[in-house]
Length: 277
Length: 277
Image (cartoon, rainbow over all chains, first blue to last red; front, side, top):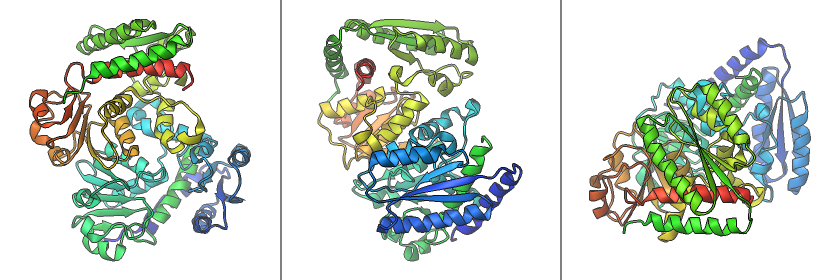
């Protein structure tokens, strides 16, 4: 079956809208883009457009800030410090990847926790990586990183039980692999993390009930690397969809797959952070 | 070969002593123990004794605080808030596990980062789980959790290259599995995390070049579960040493294995935090 990301995304957005309508408080989401005219920037712009569209659909104001590719670390830090302090802005996204001369984590740390819809500052990540040890009583923020929320929603929608399953996670990046693998282990999955240094990735992935990929290398995952009947969730457009979909039981398509769910998860986080959840 | 934890521990302690002698500043380490008369408390007491001995060996004052098993979460939080504020105390350890009615992470969060020698508060963990993305420029604390420092020191001592190796990590606890697995991935190892829900652990562990175990279940790891020539590092006394040592190339013994290195790593962290490293 092909995972219907649009349907899941719409459901999440409707739920966010419902919560929002109970507050009457106008919300604003801001996105920061560095180097809009680079090829990476062009791709990110399309993603920003989708976030803008979804935000406005539920009455959330959206503001995009663009900075030139050659902005210095300190300059950008200063600009971010201004943006995150705007009282009428309730969520701030820094579009990644940033140009390589910039210190990504240092810049992400400018976002205060209550506006960190992507769960990427050091503080938010600290909370995420410890919350499962303490969720019971600490009463703290329960938002999940958008990639994790996406995986969670897909498994809920299709009633996939995680406990006792094996999962192969391709890539260990900031946005997908690191966070998703941690969450999967906590759900009772046996997780193997495959990186560029893995010598025989197919040996591991062929045994996995679940494949999560967040590398960004088209064609990386071919049918011979997966088990018949596997669930395949592709964040990095790494999967040869045409061929792999013949073998997978459940798979995200290249369009209308994880994208709409990730966008919806960002809006869910914006609303939930405001509602203190 | 049997890993000589005492030798490695002594080397680390000598290095810490050298750094310490350059400052002339007296340091103090505090350890908090809840329920000293329980069986778990008795075991922890022995571990505290080893820390005390190592601390005093290099001129670090050591203070142990004991609280009854039935202390409430709020009471302990208040006591900790006092202990961590003592200016002449430079490092604070909360001995784990705590009795189950206490909220471990909430209590660990009382320890300020500059005294968190175990790297266990939400803030310290946030730093640890993001530092490898940002270590280059952020200029922040570089101490490692003692279990990670232990693994690192063992691999350095015996010149084991991690890049491209496969590792099976048994357990995903706060003190060992979660932190060590993250670090191993960042060193270029392909990591599989095995938990109580893993259906066929031996299938994974038999392929692994490196086994790290932190479960706390004697006899869990038997020779049929490991590959000939593997490296086995046992934090949880999980390994059937007698038999597994015949197959492993490099293995920690039940006594004089990881213990002295973990203790030394705590002292290293105490000294490094004071030196702003």
